[in-house]
Length: 195
Picture (cartoon, rainbow, N blue to C red):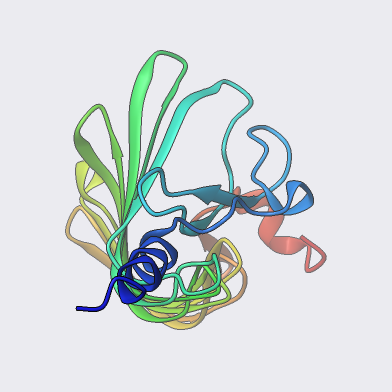
């Protein structure tokens, strides 16, 4: 190989192996404040995260897929870990990401102290779960159906401890005769459509 080619190859290898720059300050996650990006420590890929408490410490993230422009892109596995109030917490997302956010069909598992607490499996849009299967294993709870923001919405079925409630949910509430079945919100709030 001619000597002039070696520096060009070295430069190309350096550029290909370079980590992505960190996300802009205004788009970074702030525990207890705003949702935003956190950087993968190895490749510098950006992963979107939200809902972190103000007590969050030791936040780390990893991504197995690509990140051509900073935000994670395509199929992969994202693992985000942190400590909050002295407890180890972790979220594992398996599926496609677009611009660092869950998009398409995937699975998100929430762990606390190594124990699976909540799992969502189904459709995601703009990093929000929009429907599929939502489970809380320790409570024996499984919901299957539509989802909007933070609760059941649209046709769905909730099963808990051998009982099943099925029908058209409205923002976490299901009318059952003269009463409400509520999931992810207080039953008293079901009478108020503004909630």
